[in-house]
Length: 317
Length: 296
Image (cartoon, rainbow over all chains, first blue to last red; front, side):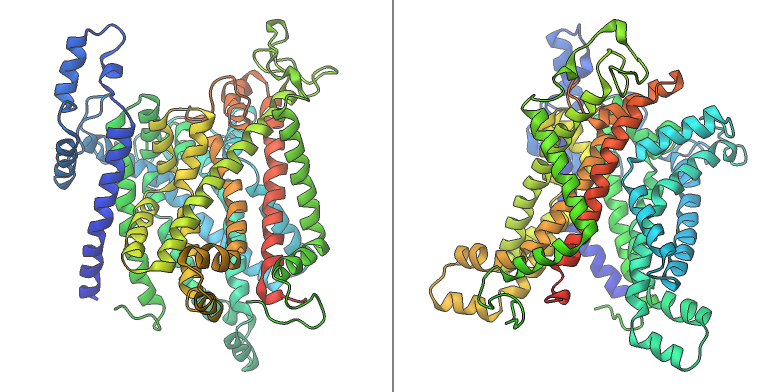
């Protein structure tokens, strides 16, 4: 196991190299020279040149690339052009209550758990009545729900539930861990609604794949009840695709949601990215892209390790 | 792949997989209705692209700003007094263009890289796998935002962004298929008959994996149409003035509180029927092309 983890970590090095190369090519080469933009409309050529020197843009490209890799190795992503804060501080926050990661998590984690719970229950029920009117109409509703833009959901539900019916605050934030929930109920509700349809269809397919397997017939023929077949046999065997999907979606719990966070003023990482894009804040977007990629690699490894836990047939080599 | 089939078509027909699939698709009512809906959208897009219908889409009139649905403007007008229905119809053209060209570009990249990797193996394979692992590691929404941000807004860049970012899944599938197919007898016999590498890749193996390409293309179409809305919201969509569903939907963030709901509704409905038809058609297509159902 330890050897496997070690080997996987070594395999990450070429991918990490690729990510640094891709982000560098994208932001430092294709993105053009940001000095003129940074200096503003009335800058003199001398001021623009000073900014170029300050940012190291007058160096040859290979030198800039090595500087960038050096920074990343030291976990130093530089400073934001817009706020002049270090990006490390922007992402981690000054305190726990101020932490964008925890803000994103307090939105995404409840959505994640509610979604898993609801979609598994609904999908299991659907497999029991498969082919019936209930099954068919739920499937069509899920497909229909997936065909509406997520932005349209957010706009409409925020307007209707928050503004028209005034059931919830329209948008806002309280940094304290108790106070923030008042503002989070509506975004959590909307987030669950806009992602549930796809999940139900996914789980239904997985469960239906299992239901026709021989072991289910065996379990039935030895007289086991529906409940025990469903929960002890089918759910257990369906765990592998479930784990792949859910663990690989975990980086997004930390990265937050671009749309929901910016609409509801949740000060998480998704909102940070929107601000960075609006301010043309190159270093922040670059750092977020890199961090997103690293998170994805970490969770990929975790998901592979979990296979072994849930499926004794899988051996690591 | 193609087995002799007694009850249906001449067994030697090279297209029997496709004819068979089409025959099955024709029996699928939901699939056929979806296809008709898609064809209607394509027609609207072509007619709008040629500027033959809804020519008034960019006619602004300050006096007619934000009119609710009425006899002249069935779906109301926007802040510049332009007809919402005409703008949504022309948005079809934008969506179709991005939805066809973006995934079109990624199909070319994905198929070529996947085919070369799977067929040649060795260092080519290692390089391609490294490349797609790298691109795949960056979360999709960050990847498209970063590309769109760097390349700047606009219709062409939108196509390029989706083309350059959407090829990974297809590349992986095509590579796996080529790994499987290159050892098969029909490829060996093509080689014995003197077919070169390129001929074996594109003339012999590729037609056998085209059904995967088709389904992936259709899935990519949907995800591009939806992603365009998010990029529009971030200000990374089409140029100002170009009609687009994404822009219409994200404009609603300022309109709803003023009671202006028709822009959001119209664009959402236009998008809804196209995406739903594409979703249903993809699943019908998948059933029709499933080799397990062959001959049924």
